[in-house]
Length: 114
Image (cartoon, rainbow, N blue to C red; front, top):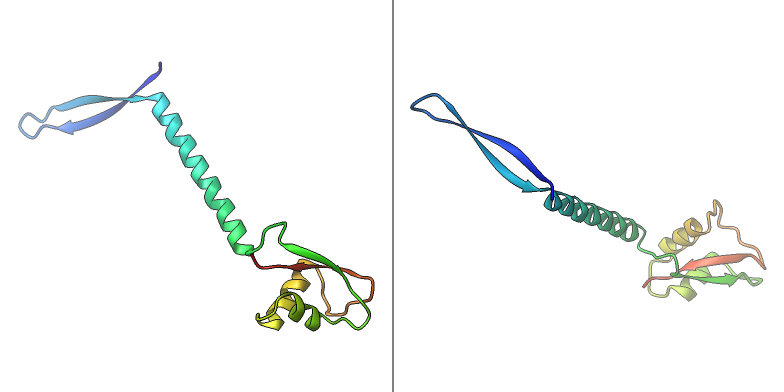
């Protein structure tokens, strides 16, 4: 078993002589603390990534655009009760669209709320 010694100094007021105390720290404890810290950091990063998007990779429905379909109608149909313009924006972002134009036969991924 490895042991690390840390120096702690304290000054005596009366004699002016430094007294050195050594405190043992087990290497296993240090490694354990570092591992726990790493796991917590990774968990926080994962949580922030998933909460930032609000969606998971599987939370979409793929549809095929039919003649006469519009993004407005699709947004209303698949996410009723939500702000339609916001849903259209999310559909466009999810499908990497720059324009709102859609065409019959086009496949769209509709993000769904959990």
